[in-house]
Amino acid sequence: MSATSTKTRCPHGDEDASADMAATPALSAGESATLRFTGSAVQTVTIAAKEGSGRILLTVDDAGTGPDGLKGPVYQYLSAQLSGMTDDEISGAEFSFRVPAAWLKAEGILPADMALWRFHDDAWQELPTSVIREEDGWVYFEATTPGFSSFAIAAGDKQEVTGTTDVVVPGGDAGTDTVDVAVTTEPVNETTSEPQVTVAIPGEEGTGTPTGTTPPQQSPLGSSLS
Image (cartoon, rainbow, N blue to C red; front, side, top):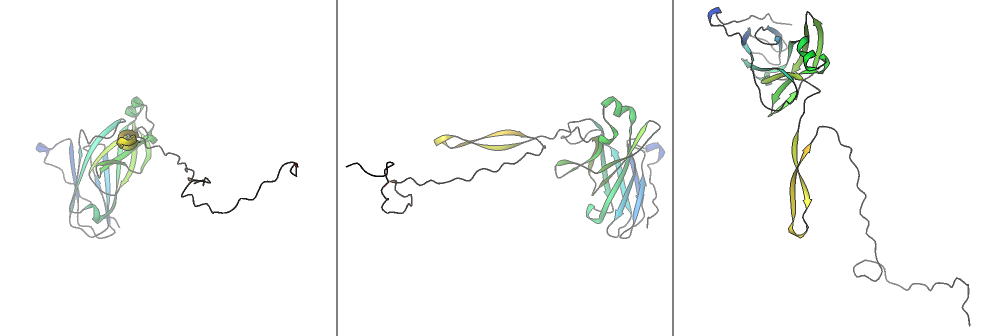
């Protein structure tokens, strides 16, 4: 069951073209509401309630800039703030948005390579994104998110995610040193190291070899000469 949504706009004289707000009445658990927007690339956001709520207010802004971390082409940064519910009280949300086909062509990006990204836990996370259609010079997309925060509409497969890690380098008697090594997201084939084998050498102490008399070796001629 989908609840009827109502849209709230700023008074005409004070309207901010870069912001858009929409509101719904109270939702019961299992209900959803679709909110419509015009102030950014986002056109609708459908929110599904996991628990009952009061009136919900969602603000979606064209943020202009966003957190660092995305190295590929970014069409638009967004800020989406939810009031009346928390992320834990929703079962998810679906964004529908559009990007000019001319922008994709200029950047050399295929529609299937675009994605909605969410900044969460101090990192950008690529969200499941689908191409819906191309119409009148626009390409339309849908993406699902578990919650709200900062978002980016950006290339999905052209993003460069880098990091560093510490590698221990033997330093002889002086100890060990660490160096920073770039880490890529490409999977690395793991190799299994050969197990160490301890070889006992007769005559050395602590080898654990059993004691006894070694039988005499026979002469290769079969008998000794008198």
